[in-house]
Length: 137
Image (cartoon, rainbow, N blue to C red; front, side, top):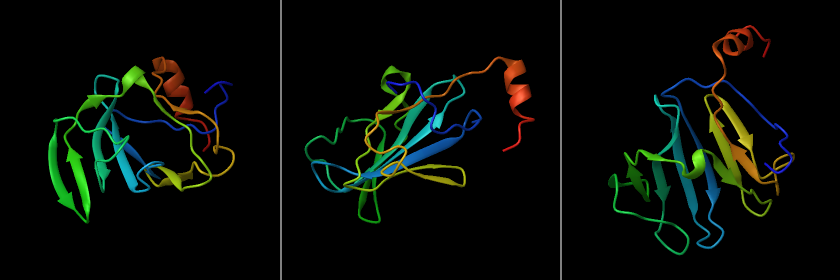
């Protein structure tokens, strides 16, 4: 984030989701957060999976709560990400993984680890989007 360097990029369509999983540094419990690129062009928090509601794990009375596989699953949050971009600083001490479509990115390894990561969706002008659809992947 501080350098402006792009470490990974991919196109995304409105309505698509992505998520990340990590170990909470205080509670030492797994967390999964699911996001969606909305039809309004915002990154929205859709779900949060936690095994507890301890220190540093926010809980607001919103969405629906259910238990699944030992997790409290907060669904239908439909909450815009604060500031429009998801920010995190992965550590090598605990696994931190980002998932998009069939891609798995290990944020707790180089080149991501210890960097302040910003996950942001940028709307391209129609012609850039058209050109990028012909780039080789």
